[in-house]
Image (cartoon, rainbow, N blue to C red; front, side, top):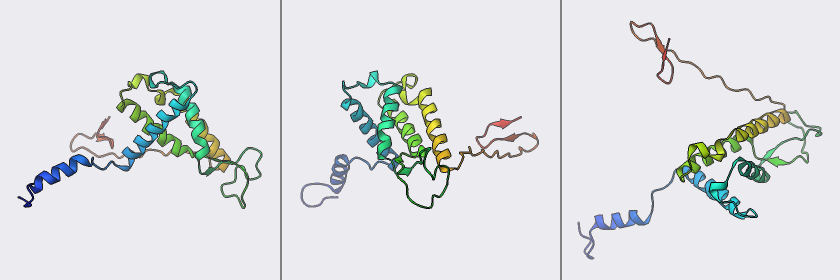
Length: 176
């Protein structure tokens, strides 16, 4: 179909789509932004840290740096409201990153590391020190709010297979 100006409509559509990349999902946008922020953090270190030299201590330093931008009130041990789920008035305790936000951030950075050429076995976001740090943050924040963290139990749905008497888990794996 011609527009009368020398170009077909299909040519215009294809050139327009080539100029504008497809819209990224919210997760992909966050992952890209987090990755760029982390890479910039490494460049700003004195001396700058190259990505291949990055290790879990750099990741922990980044998480501690990132903490200052949090919005979750975490009561300190000496605060009168420590351990109270709903304090009656404001206090001077710091705002920090919530555990769930840090956990999601690490998940996105772990995926971005591998998508950007990193090997799973050298992924600094997947190390034991990171898991320990996240567990300590989770437990301390739960204690500060007076609400202990309880892991949600996964429900096992069992479907009886006709004639076999065996069920399957929700992931489709047979249960003996």
